[in-house]
Length: 220
Image 1 (cartoon, rainbow, N blue to C red):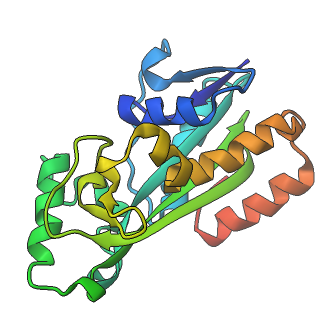
Image 2: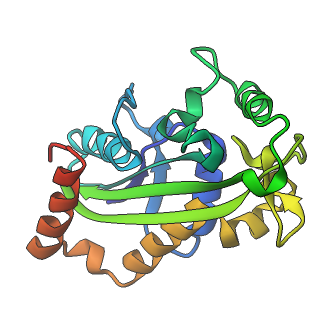
């Protein structure tokens, strides 16, 4: 039995493995499976996209636990954009750099007090096409006026943390994994895995989180 992380993003996988260090279960990504997946993230919410990933993979690997997350950046003065479009915010050929530059252009001239933003992460745990649990994490900050830092990925170089006086991309991986939205969500997953509850998913849990899914218009 394995824990499949439904991602092909090696940077994300590296962070997740560091967070889950110490868990007595083999952790693999989609890149290590003998089946290739192309999952279209066209859901209406982070939760819907996360669940779509896990349910798609779980159909083919029924004996394994599957974890999928969807996360993104929400900027207050942009009415929550880029939100679920975070990965492709700058268009069809989006890159991390293009996405960051687009945000900076859109916030040009906006004062610091109005540049508030947060990262959010929704995480779903599934086994044998059954939704076991949902985890959530977030990180508040400010959009900087320029790109700074070489670490991390995504919007990390423009996400400024006043407490640290650095962007997320200026933090070490160890520092980031103590405070990030993904670290908080996966940290909750880690506690759940350690409790061993996950190996005995109850009908109550399934009913509870299926109800959450239904509210998000997700078929489970």
